[in-house]
Image 1: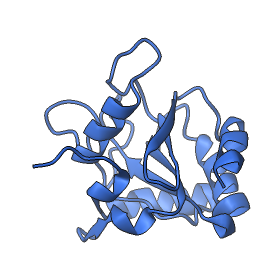
Image 2 (image 1 turned 45 degrees about the vertical axis):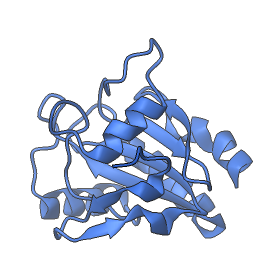
Image 3 (image 1 turned 30 degrees about the vertical axis):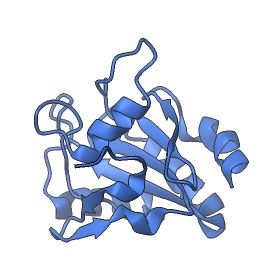
Image 4 (image 1 turned 90 degrees about the vertical axis):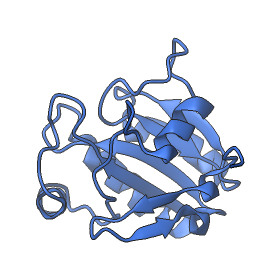
Length: 162
């Protein structure tokens, strides 16, 4: 197997169980984020939605992956998560199926993201919910942002890539 080079080398699962090729995302600027509904950072959904609405027409997408690995803060089913996000945050960008981002069961996409952009101190592990990865139009990781980085603070970097 060849080493993954871009996000196009991966698939992601939708909540209905369907796998989709991320090759369709080449040519777009992406923000990949692990999310949770019962986290102190959950209000960042508002900021992610704002970025999506502001830049979506220019080729920007948010790829949100619910994850229950941090304090059990995403315990719901796919339907419960989607309903929560729509009712509480008016979310209009799609959510993917719940995944693991760390450990033996981490999805290949997140294994690659972490290797391409280690954390601040060089650790690869995702530390908490709402860690964000900015992907350029070429499908390569541009930068990793921690949970404390609010989506609005990433807008300038997104604009530079658009």
